[in-house]
Length: 609
Image 1 (tube, rainbow, N blue to C red):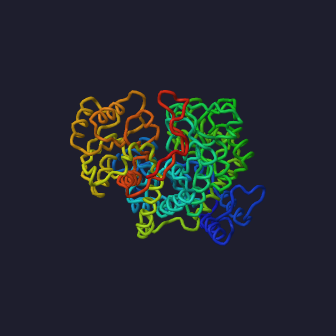
Image 2: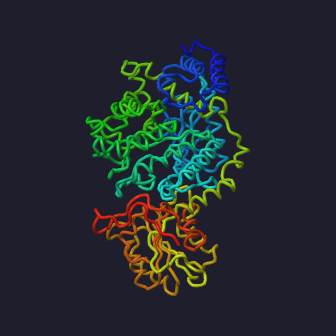
Image 3: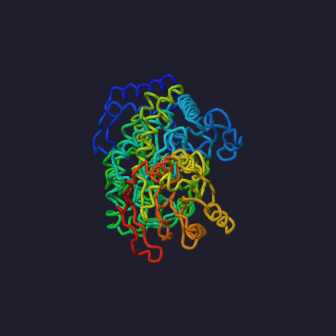
């Protein structure tokens, strides 16, 4: 049918969707609305558009794919053969023309996010390629902009504290504002779907993949923060995504490299994991991302949740009443590849109830796997249409049919504005958590503790940083009137590095030392012990997970920032200097290192000046 239809009539169908959407009611429609269509005219127009698509175009709409480079029409400048090697195309425009993909995901490592103006131009190029197809459909461009430790769009965009930091702040107004501003900035550069917020409840301190990406360990508190951030995003033109359903917070295996197993009972799932997803659905979440985890109490087949019909259709859609888009986590992760081949995984995901298939490792294999399933009758064309209509409704709600392009010249009016940056700084101050303050060591005085050594871990920097943590922290303290010496000691300081730190502490009035996920007996704890032995007062900052203090009983003062991005380190410096009050309260408990079943600092702990 598609090839007998003129392009003029197809353009008319696309325009009709935009016109109906502009005058219809679905821009703010609740995707959970049971059993009725809030805008029959728009639905008819969308169905007409779908009817013009070939099977190949329909399959393409289901895929959200990575692509290398900062331009839609040129190869990647950093690795000119990256697209050919991994995808078999030269650039984004060729990817869209060949596979008709419905979405693109941006990554920093794929060189998509150099600066806001470049990102906006790339987005416009992608939309031009989408609307140049035989059946013209705008693309849904997405990214992971969780803030905190997971950011793809960096400076000069506004970077906010991450989820656990916001959980420490406890303000739903702040969570809403993060969603609203982040959504507006992403929308201004053409990104209309953000894979945030993380709705997992992190009750396992050893969780290697969630941790500070979660708002905390208490289900009700997490649910409140998730709902607030979702409402913030929904007030902008960028779709939000609750992840990772049915809950990734109690895992000890990273699903990037293995298959985690959740041992919760059904009753525990209802009490611990479900509330935040229920809250997201109630707030009108646009999309829900699946988890590559086994959850025997919900599905005894041992299929990962991404491929589980009982979990995605039985629980998410039927029990929770969710009617929006379901997207997989990356199909390149090992957690979803262990049991089935890359050609079968997307087919099984669709049969489970998924709509969008995210970033398969080999697009041709995945795409052809779905095509074969459709041709054999394993997946019906009607089943494809159900998902495509949900995807098109999402694109319409986020304004893509009406306004597919962004104004590159106006990006600076929204992205990284002075008002947005000031809001991020104020929010960060409300998240910094003071755990220990022996002898009222903090705040430091420029007269009493003028000369400081700033040392510690400098892990690889996320996009929300302008430099190593020690450098950023020292720069801010210097601006506040202190004299600073910087020494990066790394996450595994060797004996020689520890000796250098001890020498550098000589004559200093205090030492600020950043720690990064300390484990029992590791070198960072030996570094801190050596610094304490000098007699110089030591202020420790946990720059990722807040559990480090359990291994450092002798420090004079201890702070938790929940990340090492600039905005959180600047706030920590202002707290250290007494320019801001430490207002954060632990959103997770800290257990004793020598007795993990006993709580050292409970949820809600936090000191003030």
